[in-house]
Image 1 (cartoon, helix red, strand yellow):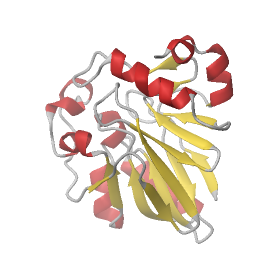
Image 2: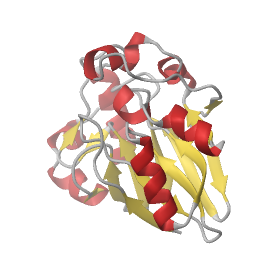
Image 3: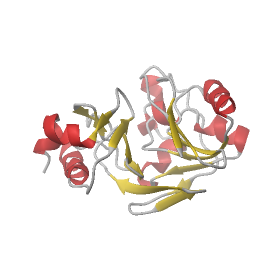
Length: 209
């Protein structure tokens, strides 16, 4: 398994990650608005896109999902509480961030807390971590935590959007803080970190209840 971080994309400079398996298949963690660039990077890496694992349903994380599915036939996975955002709900913030530009995804696979998603030798454990949105999730893959907009380097996701709740996010952060083991933290925005570093220095994570 190898993990590649693509350039930050969309007006929100959203991170997305390609996870390449030994058979040169790939999972994409989030799908910001730049399908042509993402497809070119997949081609450069020599991989076949099989799955898109969405951390939540805001437009800056999902805008390329429909086009990528149309081009590759890949599976698009999201928590059911954020499903409507992929089907055109205003809650995906496209009207505010992208002038309404966010194509609906035709085929959606729902995922839940505790699920394991497998591609070849690679497995992702789903952690439901609501607070930024109702259906926000993180994915654990070996010693990597893909945290979406739940936890950032020295910060956390906003809770003032529809479906957001600081109290709920605090409970989710507590869940992450108590994870057994150490993890590289790859989030939806900003720089790479580690869960150990965030446990020590991130005020929000330290104080989460």
